[in-house]
Length: 153
Image 1: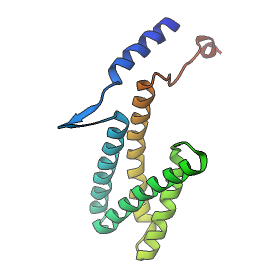
Image 2 (image 1 turned 135 degrees about the vertical axis):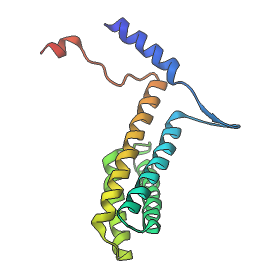
Image 3 (image 1 turned 30 degrees about the vertical axis):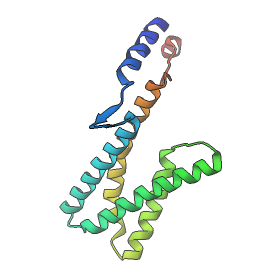
Image 4 (image 1 turned 90 degrees about the vertical axis):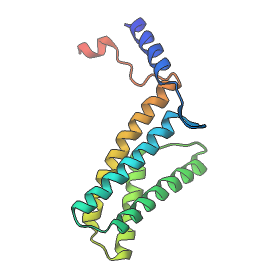
């Protein structure tokens, strides 16, 4: 079983150790997945806002506030702990609080916009999980190791 896991690790290492190249620029898969997630979630929230007859300008403001909150919380965490740690729920709570404050300040319907914001965050989370898998595999870390005896109960 261990030989099988070692072979799978080697195969995955060769598969995911790449850099995405666009023209002369290249980037790590973690960053590429993050940018793809931001792009896809922005497109999704804009589409949902249009379907629910919500303001596209408010939706874009929410996107900017959410991205800014994400970056600032990451920097603050790095300053406090000395290392970069991304915990999804910390970011989700911070984003929901800042978006709620923005919506109150703009006198917009909070729940309608929070609905589409959470859906967008869910898509961003999915891309973030792919990024984490690519990053872990690229560094040689095992994501899950399950003992066959643990499965037999």
